[in-house]
Structure formats: structure tokens, C-alpha cells
Length: 475
Image (cartoon, rainbow, N blue to C red):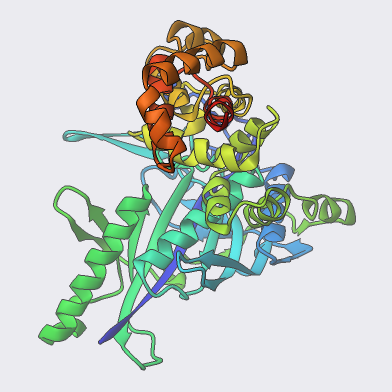
């Protein structure tokens, strides 16, 4: 039996307007190599000037994970050459990062929890981007110099499931405090996974393998599973010492394998030394007070939803997992509807109809529309069954809630006079069953309800209908 050891390094692209050491914009999808200047191209004589906003956002993250925010930190130079790194070095924080020693709690479906330690979060400049087209490789340096926050966990995770729970929670936090858009497809939330195994009960840490730059939760889970299987097979075959070496590997989603990319460098290989062109970073009292004042975090919002609205833990977790969904829910409640009904129509009815990565906030149904639809149910304008028809129609065609209700003829009849006349006709046409009901066959009440709903083509208000029927049958 083996135990899996997982540590994660997450590169979060900070959503500052300009790069880390110059005034070039960080906008995504601009024409290649247009957002550049002598500083981010590391041309001779160009000197870096630190972006204060990047430090502030890093400090906000430190507050969010209960970490130490170092009031004085330093930048270091990490030497290496890649085609997408024009300087042949990276400015980062090795020895004294701005954030250290935090923690993050992950929640399992059975209600249990686990705390994952965060070793550090340091600021560094991103590299550019290599674009491979057949036998030709191109370099786009628009991204070079974009501020990154590298968040390094301790090796506290023991399964792919735990790793994904940690990443989803981390992703949620950086979105809630608005330090990054954390778009995995655009590369603003990139994950390096460190994986090793050991026999159960062994405390030794064996050779770890790094799997580089995976850009979806599903791929990360699969990459971990494949790498763990590879290492276990090597151990059982007696080839562990020769096959499992400290290296960087890539995940090939087509071949469903991890593949060697390069040997893993040690710190000495990078020839770190203090960055000579930058002063020490000082977080003064004003900035410290600012970074300690962060927006409501997912766990706090979840707890508030449970306490304030009386919804259960599971539903609160589903709603608060994504910032946009939490805002959607709160906007629904602004329509004056019950939280219980809002939860059902958001998490069951709407989300159950969405697919292909479409979320409530990106769907054609706005929070105001869905809230209004639920309100029409609570006002007895339409039944819950009719509301589902309206929702289906809106998803397909769009439109105004009330217009669609009228168009589909789904408005409930609550006019007591009209319902009394309809019921009188049914009771008169079924006099024999009325007699049977009055002689003790109470189950026939459902028959009368069914006949009345059929006669009204489903438009009768069930509550009003039942009240009138009970009164008529008691006479």
C-alpha cells in the first residue's frame, strides 16, 4: 500500500492595469509584441520600478489565508534562459517573500474538513509566451513582465481529490477578493503539480516529479492519477530508482500520459542573488491596514447564507463556490422571494438545464428574470409546473416573463366566481361520485381536483380550487 504526497505551485496572474516593473498594459489578446517597452524587454539601461498595486494584492491574499504579511521583503534575481524570457533572468522573491505561512481549509462531501498549509506566496514577473505552429516557433512578449503571485503549498495533500478541492477553494478566494480573473484558459491561473509516493507508514519523502502548467481542473486530476500509477508501477517492478527521477514532466491529454520535459533544476542551478536594481519592499502602516480590509470570503459568505437565510450547508456551498453564482443568488433575493425557493430554482431548475460550461451568470436568464419567475409562483400567478414551461421557453427564445406567461396561457385562475361555476358543473355532472364521497369515500376528492384542473386546462389556482371544493362537498 502506498501513500500519495502532493504539493502545488499555483501561478496567479494579478489583475493590475500595468506590468510589474513598467507601465505597459497587461491586457489579454492584443496584437503580439505590442505591449512591450525597453524595461520589460530588459534592454540595456532600462530599470524596473515596482508596481505598488501588485504588492497590495499580494497582501490581500495573505490576509485571506491567515498568513504572515512580511512588512519588509526583497526581490531576487533567478537566472535562466528560455526564448520567451528576454532578460535571461526572472525577478522573483526567494529568500524573503511578501507572504508566508498561511492555511486553507478544504471541505469534503461527507462534511469533514482538512487544513492545507501554504508555505509562501511571492511576487514575480511572468515570462512571455511561445507559440508553436508546425515546425515554426514564435515568441509573443506581451505577457513578459506581467505580475504573478506564486502560491506554494506544503506537501499536505494525499489524493487527486484533495488537490482539486484545494485548487477550487484557492481559485474561489482569489476571485472573491478580486486580485485576479483566474481564467485558466487564458493562463491567469496556472498549476504545477509535485507528486511523489511512499509506502504507508513511511515518513520519508521520496523523489518528487513536477508536472508543469496544467490549465483545467479535470486535466490536473487526470495528470495526478496517471503519474501516481506510473510511480507505483515502477516501485512494484523494482525500477523505481532508475525510472523515477526528479524532473519536470508534461501532461499529454491525447495520449493520456505524463511525459518527460526536462531535468528538474535545483536552486543552485538558477544562481539566485539579490536583485541589484530594486530596493527592499516596505509595507507601511497605511498599506497594511488596507490589505487587512478584504471583501467577504467564500466561507464567511457560506456561513452568512446558512444563518441569515436558513439554507443548508450543502446548498450554501454550491451557491458560494463561484463568486458570480453567489452574486446571482443575492440578486434573485432582491426580488423579494424566499431563499428556499431561490435555491431550488437556481441550483435545481436553472443549473439542471445548463450544459457545455454555461453558468447561471453567463446564461440568457438573468438573476432578475429568474427571481421574477419565482415571485410569480409565490404570488400564485402561475404554478410551479407552469413556471418550468416558462423557463424552458425563455432559454430557447428569450422574452419578458409576464409576456411569456400570457403567450403560453399559463396564468392561474384565482377568480373565485369563475372557479365556483366550473366546480358546480363538475359536481353536477358527477352526482353519483359526490354521493359516494359524502358516504365516506374521501379519496374521491382527488378525482374532483383532477377534473377541475382538466376543465381549467391546468390554469386553476390549486389552493383556491381546493378550498372551494372542500366547501361545496361539505354542503
